[in-house]
Amino acid sequence: MDKISLQRIQTLHPLIREDATRTLEEAFKLGIIVRITQALRSWAEQDELYSLGRGDSVAKIVTNARGGSSWHNYG
Picture (cartoon, rainbow, N blue to C red):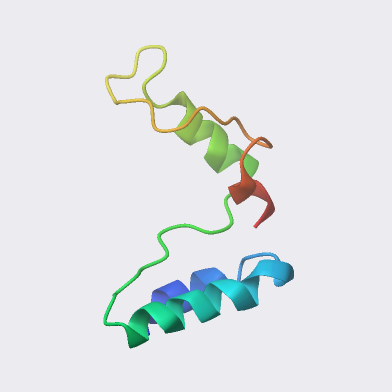
């Protein structure tokens, strides 16, 4: 299993950490490779993502959730 994904899972809320690990293990057994790209995200990181595609940015909008409005902010 992917070491980076396992490290990121450790930042999740304890109530879903075990389920996330089990899901990755089951996918791996089926030959499906999964990488957790992000788990816990600070409110500042969320606000930075929210700003993409808004204002003067030429990037595409990637989220409609501001800091505190994303499940990523709570692990």
